[in-house]
Image 1 (cartoon, helix red, strand yellow):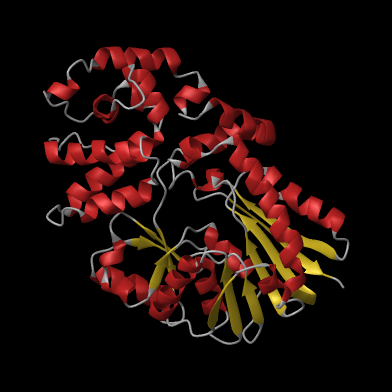
Image 2: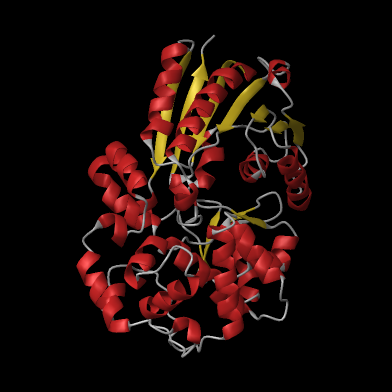
Length: 412
């Protein structure tokens, strides 16, 4: 094993596979869209994979995972290959060395020197920002907030994300779904601490499976699956999910409530609610009503109306870098500051929708205390008629995405 890939786990090894030029071109094109045109990696890969239906599963896996690998290790690979920001062919060559794949004799890959790259890694592997491939400013922010635990969390955020399914208990049970998937030669693990979760033994495009089309499951990280139960919503209650987005947690709430009661799913972007409606139909979730937040009047009309209120607020997304590695190159200090102001605004303005005696869950997919505990503390300082009942932090080092959740009660 070469020196440069003994430091990290979950690296891809395509050493038994010869690189094909058309697949490599697809990777380079994807990287250009992500880094030059500033597009989101997941959308870029989805579009590229749709562009050639003749690619098989292995080809698609190579394109997707190689692109994500290079995005994840972008800064490190540039240093190892002494490459310019947009020299994506050279970055692919470094990836070949890194993953011990074949290095084709192509014009674009001339000058890739395996011994030199391995030697350079030895000289820089003790430099955390290079070894873990992260911008200086972001490393400084996270270290200032997380202290010595940042080392462990940063390393965990560079691991490949596990694919986790959430069983739709409106239509099936975990045991039944696991058996259905076995019949399709899909092996899963059922973790005891996440009662609705199944972990895929091998990454694959699960969205083409009939079980998904039939609404038997959604793809949702295990950490994310803790949030809806944390709200303690009961069948028959009136629940508001005020930052619903595409509706992953909304659908989980519907299943926990056995389709009884009413869920009002809200968002400031109407197109996300349109997507939620499609997902709800597939899932058989019949107690969800969508409502577009046009202005503050939308919130005002719902004051004192909810038994439960979920505020899964916009955030930096630093807890989900495993599955969105391009975010670390797109984030800015200004964005993080603006999103923190938005979080406090949402907490302060939306909290009135819950009834006295009702519960609020404030949640993020961030690892920063300034987006999490400190936001809740500031809210409680200015809103003494609310109290903190419980809070929970899911660290990336626990094996899944990073999440924070706080359960509050309105007293008056």
